[in-house]
Image (tube, rainbow, N blue to C red):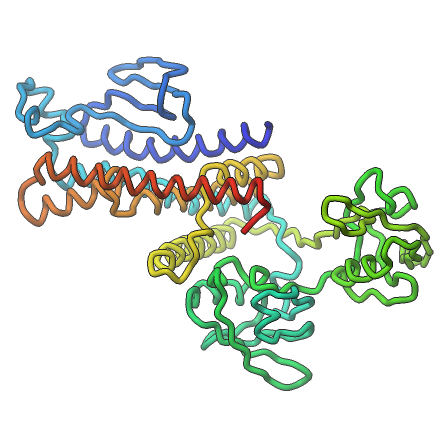
Length: 442
């Protein structure tokens, strides 16, 4: 419940920023704002200050700013207005001013990350320790794209296509540009170079790990589940597992295979703790639901805490924002071209989950997730779909070209088509969310 509430609050912040853009630019152009609402549907709170009614409504999945003269039809566009009302009517402003007002919302969403990501870097961020290390594969997931392409543990990626790769971060950024295309890897293996090809279903947009290529991870215990054998036997966070019943453990990924091979028999775990080696003996228990043997441990996530000065923070914040915008644009382009599966589309449930989980961690995580979601919201609203801001911008462009507004009937028909498209997209997104939530992924 706390996750849901925190997620809704974070989503509300992004909606507020979006609508504030429309509101401020409307006021700058002397347009009368009738309503400023967070949410849709029945009103929960209403207060009038000056000439504007401010509302909080029951459905927290958006918001709106209602302006004088907005959405008038052909029949009432020429309805009698006082001279003062005409001067402050949205419909009576020039196409340039109306375009500025409409574009202000998504532009605010795109500007926000440039402001808050530097703050995250100034406060300090926890980054995966491997992200700046050489892109050497520690484990290849069976039946993954990487496995099918011939990757082996120990392979170090030195190039993807024409891009030279120095570390994991370089590799993940390079995959964005090649999403939807056949991936050509050059890897260093046993002091020689090898070429490997891959054509993944998800386009590689989610990074090397989505392709089944994982970094090396030592078998260090991060946490233990209560009531399961490892904790009961005295295993502690920070323990390094060296061997299981005389079988050496080289990485975390060796554990599952060795534990399953024991088939529930008592095993001897050779542990290094505080520079001393100890042995713990206990038997795994069987999970009736999945039929696997468990001991109740999870890995230690090795992270590096980095804090930057103001100049470097703004530099890295701007670079990260640009990367996220590029990633989003590439994803949309590949989605419409059919190179990326529609299964990757997430909806409000996933957004609330992501935001809510981040809200319960630290300030830098909150700012990072806010930046990511703000970019998604801004770019989504710029799509040329009638009913979205991008659709209104398209109408304004047509008016600029043809020197007169499109007729109300054309706009109404286009908006109905846009509404159907948007509803179809929402249904697909909700479906994907529900599958992820209740079926456990796709």
